[in-house]
Length: 115
Image (cartoon, rainbow, N blue to C red; front, side, top):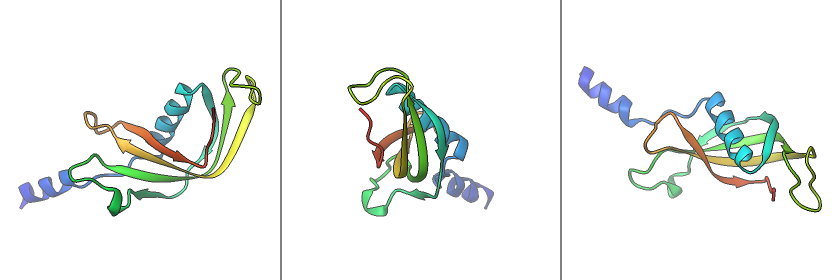
């Protein structure tokens, strides 16, 4: 019985914590030369069944009611270093790293457009 529960627990994906999500999102935007000044996370849902692949890594869609980014450098004619960009009602999809179950990566972003 205990062995069965162990395998069932191992097979179930655990959604990432808010801290893990914040860290993954900050890492993503820092790689794009933006600081995440403020972020508010909303509902976290599993990737819709129609988009899952057999034995794929777990994925989640995170609602982001508000996020503020600050440009680390000049990003073009309309965005200068230090400019703040505010977005609302975005969605960010994260996927678990296949080799490290505690690591999450941003895979798709909607509602946040930055050069």
